[in-house]
Every structure is written in C-alpha cells, then in structure tokens.
Length: 306
Image (cartoon, rainbow, N blue to C red; front, side):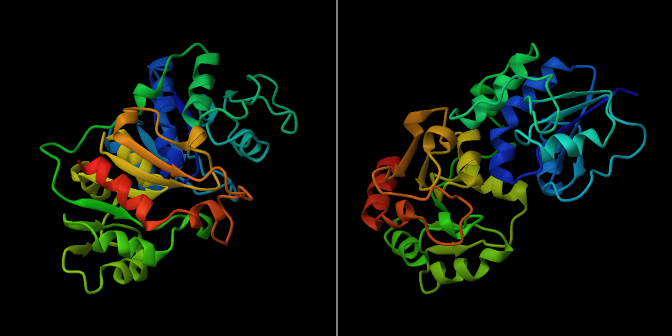
C-alpha cells in the first residue's frame, strides 16, 4: 500500500479551489504517495472524483481532532494556514514528517517563512516550491464535464459565507430583471429565501438554490455565458473552467483573491477608495460592497456577454 500524505485545508469551496494548484504540485512532488485531503466531505469527494487528490478525511475547521484511521500518515502537510492551531492539529496525527510554513508559536521551524500580501494561489505554490516541487497558476484549471458546452444563460450566485460580502438582494434582482438571457440563480440550501426573492415574478429567472451538489454547480458554471457573484467560491470555479465572470470585491483585495488566469475573461468591481474595516467574515455589509451600483454590474455584465 502506498504511503499516505495528509494535506489539511479544512476550509470552504473558494479556499479549496485556490489550493488546487498547490495540490497538483504536491502530486508531482510525491508521486508515490496517496494524497488524502482533510476538508469538508463534499469538497474532498468532488476533488477526488476529479483526480486532484486520492481521498478525503472529512473535517471542517480546526475545532476537532482529525480522525485519522490506522497507522500515522507518512507526511502531514499544512495547507490551511500559518498556525499555530493548524500545525498542532496535524502534530496530533503523529505523522513521520510535517511540512508547512514555519510557526514559532507551534514550535515548527522546519518550513519557509509565512508570506504576507501575496496572492493566495501563489502563497501555497511557493510552499510547494520551497520543498523542491513545481506548480503555477496554470494548475488551477479544472475540466468541464464531458460533453458540456457553453449555454445561453447568465449564472447568478448572490450568496456569500458572511453578510460582509453579500451584495443586497434587491440589487441582484434588478440585475436579473434587466437580462435578455435566461438567468440561473444558484446557492446552497440556506440561500433558498434569497433565490425566491430574486426569481419571484420574473419568468426568465430560474431558481436553482438548494438543488445542486458540487458537481451540478460546476456543470452550471461551465455552461454559463457569464457568472455573476461576490468574492466567493463560485468566482474561483468560473476561473477554473474558463467561464467569463464579474465578481464584486469588498473587504478582500482582488490582488490576493482575484482571478490569475485569462484576465480578459474576468472583470472585478472593487471600490478600493471607500474606507473598509477589511473584515470578510463580518456580520454587517462591507462599505465597499455597498458602494457597488446596479448600473456598474449591468455595464460589466454586458461587456462580458458581448
């Protein structure tokens, strides 16, 4: 049986997708290892089906010990953060060797120093390179489902993990109402009320919130003419499958979280001039998100469709 490398990235879809390039770098660097990703099960299962990793250890966040079965893994790789919590969580697996960024508080000095103010993709690619591997932004690409072609619809993903990044629902509805193409509204089960609010009374708007698994969402994104969203996982998915996109940024900078590939296919709206607390997980709407007008979003959408 091949030795196991346990890679921790117990975060959401956007974080998983920005880590795909590094995961592929580890794959090349560790060809004889079985790569097991510690992350939420739906994300890990989907990435396993795509061949990015070999298996998933279901976990979410850093609040519980990792339930690693059997003998300790050969390697434990911290793709989650700078530590100390993530380092200490992996330490408890008793892996033969740990890899990651150095963290004084976790007494882990074997890795390179943490990089500030770099793109999230580049940060984790740099970690791979520091251990002798290779990877780049080109490794972010994911295949479209077999036979999938671009369709004539706009995909709108109005939700986000926290209120700070949720553009107001009435503005999303105004954008949807102005489209001459069908609009597919996507989101998780908690976005159902939002989907109904946007689609109600608009016959060309189709509410798909709460109805799609990750593979189904990827299929919808892959078939769209353009994807409209805030800075969330669906925007990274659009980059990965080369679907045009318009993304609203607020507390987080597109220089850290924005698209790195096919820049002519992706537009970002970011009011950097507006003062912001820069808290992407805040419970109130970020002023930079609030500053984005319906007219701006419509103009950017038209540019991408044409």
